[in-house]
Length: 219
Image 1 (spheres, rainbow, N blue to C red):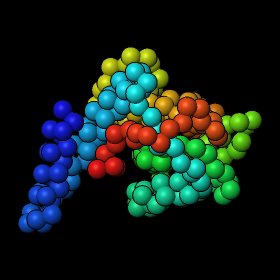
Image 2 (image 1 turned 180 degrees about the vertical axis):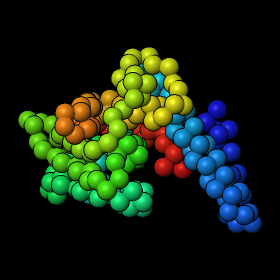
Image 3 (image 1 turned 90 degrees about the horizontal axis):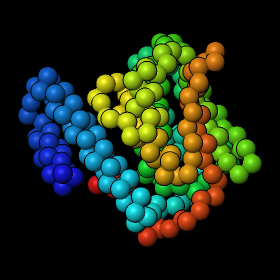
Image 4 (image 1 turned 45 degrees about the vertical axis):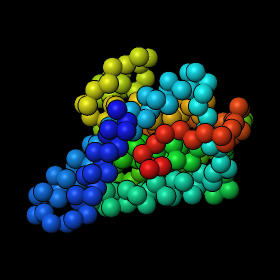
């Protein structure tokens, strides 16, 4: 399935490069590419989960700077934030490092920030903080706006949840898988402000650089 979807994605990108369509067709093609890309990610995630359970899959750990990876994530969604007059504030420690697979962790933060921007009120602030608790890094993403729907919450946290295309639920399930792979935890709360809280160990166990997980960003 992954090989087939990857071929479809490459074909769609080749068609888009021709640039011989009207605006509506270009927008439709972009949506098809986005949908196919996400389908490829979900197939890759299922393959990674299976391999992880068999202890055949390892991350390519790198010493990542938290401030830099959050800055890069904010840059990707700066335009989306500006369209809603939302200010992105990165208050993370500039000297905080942790071991993680860069590609998968970047993907997780991208999905989270995209969800937060989509749920945030116009003319509001999104604030990202960090702190160290014993041997863990804690990242808090605060925003004003809609909380996760019941369906999204179930897709994210229930064991053996059935996937659905409703809202961001399926994407949030992918985020949780990535955090789980890193022996971390993710929480959500809505006391005064909505908050996504991620806790990640600073030093990972069983680290290996032999095999990278499968992600679309690697293609």
